[in-house]
Image (cartoon, rainbow, N blue to C red; front, side, top):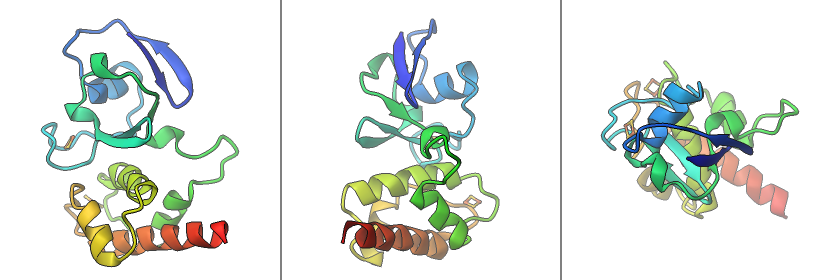
Length: 155
Ligand code: FES
Ligand code: FES
């Protein structure tokens, strides 16, 4: 199966039942994307598929037709972090960090979808991403910071 991930093309020979999450973690060593529940309940496995955020544990590799972006491919190669990554650091929006890659990818999607106008809206559109450490207030603050930075950049 041909697939483009973070700008690189891969040809994978895997079982037809392989999920995108297992392809990333088990076959491509892209372990930044986390497996939490493996049942679509926690958001830890969130990646971008084309312009959309998806749960990679519920996405069959064989169904993937668009380029995939994972947490490893979010920032450019020059070492500068994506604004959402930087906001999570600035706002100290994690504790153990296990949910963080999924939170960051979901936040990127939330912002690109235009669903970050208020804290309530951020909470609603980030509600599919659970955090066992309950870092939710700081995660909302990080999304807010990234939103405000994007608005300043567009002025
Ligand atoms: Fe995919 Fe939990 S691992 S939603
Ligand atoms: Fe620990 Fe979210 S930071 S689960």
